[in-house]
Length: 243
Image (cartoon, rainbow, N blue to C red; front, side, top):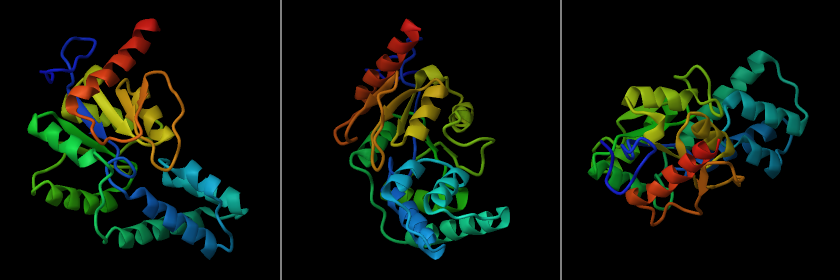
Protein backbone atom coordinates (compact mmCIF):
# COMPACT_ATOMS: atom_id res chain seq x y z
CA UNK A 1 0.00 0.00 0.00
CA UNK A 2 1.28 3.46 -0.86
CA UNK A 3 1.62 6.49 1.36
CA UNK A 4 -1.21 9.04 1.08
CA UNK A 5 -0.21 12.14 -0.84
CA UNK A 6 2.27 10.33 -3.10
CA UNK A 7 1.59 8.42 -6.27
CA UNK A 8 3.53 6.23 -8.67
CA UNK A 9 2.71 5.09 -12.20
CA UNK A 10 0.79 2.06 -10.94
CA UNK A 11 -1.30 4.19 -8.61
CA UNK A 12 0.04 2.28 -5.63
CA UNK A 13 2.00 5.28 -4.43
CA UNK A 14 5.29 5.47 -2.61
CA UNK A 15 6.36 2.01 -1.49
CA UNK A 16 9.83 2.60 -0.05
CA UNK A 17 12.49 5.21 0.68
CA UNK A 18 16.12 4.26 0.05
CA UNK A 19 18.99 6.34 1.41
CA UNK A 20 22.65 6.51 0.54
CA UNK A 21 24.79 6.98 3.66
CA UNK A 22 28.00 9.04 3.34
CA UNK A 23 27.20 12.64 2.47
CA UNK A 24 23.47 11.95 2.12
CA UNK A 25 22.25 10.66 5.47
CA UNK A 26 25.20 11.71 7.64
CA UNK A 27 28.31 13.88 7.41
CA UNK A 28 30.84 11.08 6.96
CA UNK A 29 31.98 11.64 3.38
CA UNK A 30 34.68 14.03 4.60
CA UNK A 31 36.28 11.16 6.55
CA UNK A 32 36.95 9.33 3.29
CA UNK A 33 38.45 12.51 1.88
CA UNK A 34 40.74 12.94 4.88
CA UNK A 35 41.93 9.34 4.52
CA UNK A 36 42.53 9.73 0.78
CA UNK A 37 44.53 12.93 1.25
CA UNK A 38 46.55 11.26 4.01
CA UNK A 39 47.30 8.21 1.85
CA UNK A 40 48.49 10.44 -0.98
CA UNK A 41 50.93 12.09 1.40
CA UNK A 42 52.13 8.66 2.62
CA UNK A 43 52.90 7.87 -1.01
CA UNK A 44 54.85 11.10 -1.46
CA UNK A 45 52.23 13.15 -3.29
CA UNK A 46 49.37 15.60 -2.79
CA UNK A 47 45.94 14.65 -4.07
CA UNK A 48 44.19 17.51 -5.84
CA UNK A 49 40.75 18.74 -4.80
CA UNK A 50 39.50 17.96 -8.30
CA UNK A 51 40.62 14.35 -8.05
CA UNK A 52 39.05 14.00 -4.61
CA UNK A 53 35.75 15.30 -5.98
CA UNK A 54 35.78 12.59 -8.65
CA UNK A 55 36.12 9.88 -5.98
CA UNK A 56 32.89 10.82 -4.17
CA UNK A 57 30.42 7.95 -4.21
CA UNK A 58 32.73 5.56 -6.08
CA UNK A 59 34.08 2.14 -5.13
CA UNK A 60 37.41 1.81 -3.35
CA UNK A 61 39.07 0.43 -6.49
CA UNK A 62 37.86 3.37 -8.57
CA UNK A 63 38.84 5.91 -5.92
CA UNK A 64 42.34 4.48 -5.57
CA UNK A 65 42.75 4.49 -9.34
CA UNK A 66 41.88 8.18 -9.41
CA UNK A 67 44.29 8.90 -6.54
CA UNK A 68 47.19 6.99 -8.11
CA UNK A 69 46.71 8.70 -11.48
CA UNK A 70 46.49 12.10 -9.82
CA UNK A 71 49.79 11.78 -7.95
CA UNK A 72 51.55 9.65 -10.55
CA UNK A 73 51.90 6.58 -8.32
CA UNK A 74 52.24 2.99 -9.53
CA UNK A 75 51.09 0.31 -7.09
CA UNK A 76 50.97 -3.46 -7.32
CA UNK A 77 47.75 -5.35 -6.59
CA UNK A 78 49.08 -6.30 -3.16
CA UNK A 79 50.03 -2.70 -2.42
CA UNK A 80 46.60 -1.48 -3.57
CA UNK A 81 44.91 -3.97 -1.23
CA UNK A 82 47.08 -2.72 1.63
CA UNK A 83 46.23 0.90 0.72
CA UNK A 84 42.51 0.07 0.73
CA UNK A 85 42.80 -1.52 4.15
CA UNK A 86 44.73 1.49 5.45
CA UNK A 87 42.02 3.85 4.24
CA UNK A 88 39.29 1.75 5.85
CA UNK A 89 41.19 1.59 9.14
CA UNK A 90 41.72 5.36 9.09
CA UNK A 91 38.04 6.00 8.42
CA UNK A 92 37.11 3.57 11.21
CA UNK A 93 39.12 5.70 13.66
CA UNK A 94 37.45 8.89 12.44
CA UNK A 95 33.99 7.33 12.84
CA UNK A 96 34.48 7.03 16.59
CA UNK A 97 33.68 10.75 16.86
CA UNK A 98 30.21 12.31 17.17
CA UNK A 99 27.61 11.64 14.48
CA UNK A 100 26.44 14.61 12.42
CA UNK A 101 23.29 14.26 10.34
CA UNK A 102 22.92 15.93 6.97
CA UNK A 103 20.36 18.76 7.20
CA UNK A 104 16.82 17.41 7.10
CA UNK A 105 17.84 13.74 6.81
CA UNK A 106 16.95 12.77 10.37
CA UNK A 107 13.56 14.48 10.12
CA UNK A 108 12.66 12.83 6.81
CA UNK A 109 13.75 9.41 8.02
CA UNK A 110 11.85 9.84 11.29
CA UNK A 111 8.67 10.78 9.43
CA UNK A 112 9.07 7.81 7.09
CA UNK A 113 9.40 5.44 10.05
CA UNK A 114 6.39 6.97 11.78
CA UNK A 115 4.38 6.42 8.61
CA UNK A 116 5.50 2.76 8.48
CA UNK A 117 7.12 3.42 5.11
CA UNK A 118 9.70 0.70 4.33
CA UNK A 119 13.25 2.06 4.34
CA UNK A 120 16.65 0.85 3.19
CA UNK A 121 20.23 2.05 3.47
CA UNK A 122 22.25 1.38 0.33
CA UNK A 123 25.91 2.30 0.70
CA UNK A 124 29.22 1.57 -0.98
CA UNK A 125 30.83 1.60 2.48
CA UNK A 126 31.80 -1.88 3.73
CA UNK A 127 29.70 -3.50 6.46
CA UNK A 128 32.26 -3.16 9.26
CA UNK A 129 32.24 0.63 8.90
CA UNK A 130 28.56 1.05 8.06
CA UNK A 131 27.57 -0.79 11.23
CA UNK A 132 29.44 1.79 13.33
CA UNK A 133 27.36 4.55 11.76
CA UNK A 134 24.11 2.57 11.90
CA UNK A 135 24.49 1.98 15.63
CA UNK A 136 24.73 5.73 16.19
CA UNK A 137 21.82 6.42 13.84
CA UNK A 138 19.64 3.96 15.73
CA UNK A 139 20.58 5.55 19.06
CA UNK A 140 19.62 8.97 17.71
CA UNK A 141 16.22 7.54 16.77
CA UNK A 142 15.62 6.37 20.34
CA UNK A 143 17.00 2.92 19.68
CA UNK A 144 14.50 2.04 16.98
CA UNK A 145 16.01 0.45 13.85
CA UNK A 146 16.22 3.18 11.24
CA UNK A 147 16.15 0.80 8.29
CA UNK A 148 14.30 -2.37 7.39
CA UNK A 149 17.12 -3.38 5.05
CA UNK A 150 20.79 -2.39 4.81
CA UNK A 151 22.99 -3.17 1.80
CA UNK A 152 26.73 -2.50 2.00
CA UNK A 153 29.47 -2.30 -0.58
CA UNK A 154 31.00 -5.66 0.28
CA UNK A 155 27.65 -7.47 -0.02
CA UNK A 156 26.79 -6.82 -3.68
CA UNK A 157 27.91 -8.30 -7.02
CA UNK A 158 28.67 -4.80 -8.37
CA UNK A 159 28.91 -1.36 -6.80
CA UNK A 160 27.36 1.97 -7.77
CA UNK A 161 26.97 3.29 -10.48
CA UNK A 162 25.79 -0.24 -11.27
CA UNK A 163 22.12 -0.61 -10.22
CA UNK A 164 22.81 -3.94 -8.48
CA UNK A 165 22.88 -2.51 -4.91
CA UNK A 166 19.48 -0.87 -5.38
CA UNK A 167 18.01 -3.94 -7.07
CA UNK A 168 19.20 -5.98 -4.10
CA UNK A 169 17.60 -3.62 -1.58
CA UNK A 170 14.29 -3.52 -3.48
CA UNK A 171 14.19 -7.32 -3.64
CA UNK A 172 14.84 -7.57 0.10
CA UNK A 173 12.04 -5.07 0.77
CA UNK A 174 9.74 -6.86 -1.70
CA UNK A 175 8.89 -3.57 -3.45
CA UNK A 176 8.79 -2.46 -7.07
CA UNK A 177 11.18 0.13 -8.47
CA UNK A 178 8.15 2.12 -9.66
CA UNK A 179 7.28 2.90 -6.03
CA UNK A 180 10.78 3.68 -4.76
CA UNK A 181 12.46 7.00 -4.10
CA UNK A 182 16.24 6.97 -3.75
CA UNK A 183 18.07 9.81 -1.98
CA UNK A 184 21.66 10.34 -3.17
CA UNK A 185 24.42 12.97 -3.11
CA UNK A 186 26.78 11.69 -5.82
CA UNK A 187 26.75 11.17 -9.58
CA UNK A 188 27.60 7.50 -9.07
CA UNK A 189 24.73 6.98 -6.65
CA UNK A 190 22.16 8.94 -8.65
CA UNK A 191 23.12 7.01 -11.77
CA UNK A 192 22.67 3.71 -9.91
CA UNK A 193 19.26 4.69 -8.58
CA UNK A 194 17.98 5.82 -11.98
CA UNK A 195 19.36 2.70 -13.67
CA UNK A 196 17.50 0.59 -11.11
CA UNK A 197 14.25 2.24 -12.21
CA UNK A 198 13.70 4.27 -9.04
CA UNK A 199 12.86 7.94 -8.74
CA UNK A 200 15.91 9.83 -7.44
CA UNK A 201 16.16 12.89 -5.22
CA UNK A 202 19.65 14.35 -5.54
CA UNK A 203 21.04 16.45 -2.71
CA UNK A 204 24.68 17.32 -3.54
CA UNK A 205 27.25 17.58 -0.77
CA UNK A 206 30.88 17.49 -1.98
CA UNK A 207 30.20 16.87 -5.66
CA UNK A 208 27.89 18.82 -8.00
CA UNK A 209 25.15 16.81 -9.66
CA UNK A 210 24.33 17.34 -13.34
CA UNK A 211 20.79 17.53 -14.64
CA UNK A 212 19.83 13.95 -15.45
CA UNK A 213 16.49 12.77 -16.88
CA UNK A 214 14.22 11.90 -13.97
CA UNK A 215 16.53 13.33 -11.30
CA UNK A 216 15.04 15.93 -8.94
CA UNK A 217 17.68 18.22 -7.41
CA UNK A 218 17.38 19.96 -4.05
CA UNK A 219 20.01 21.97 -2.19
CA UNK A 220 19.08 20.30 1.09
CA UNK A 221 16.68 17.83 2.67
CA UNK A 222 15.73 20.45 5.24
CA UNK A 223 11.99 20.91 5.03
CA UNK A 224 11.45 17.90 2.74
CA UNK A 225 8.47 15.82 3.89
CA UNK A 226 7.32 12.38 2.82
CA UNK A 227 4.42 13.98 0.92
CA UNK A 228 6.93 16.02 -1.12
CA UNK A 229 8.33 12.83 -2.62
CA UNK A 230 5.37 12.78 -5.02
CA UNK A 231 7.33 15.38 -7.03
CA UNK A 232 10.24 12.96 -7.34
CA UNK A 233 8.00 10.12 -8.48
CA UNK A 234 6.31 12.41 -11.00
CA UNK A 235 9.65 13.50 -12.52
CA UNK A 236 10.67 9.89 -13.08
CA UNK A 237 7.22 9.01 -14.48
CA UNK A 238 7.38 11.92 -16.94
CA UNK A 239 10.66 10.57 -18.36
CA UNK A 240 9.21 7.07 -18.70
CA UNK A 241 6.08 8.45 -20.37
CA UNK A 242 8.16 10.34 -22.93
CA UNK A 243 10.45 7.42 -23.72
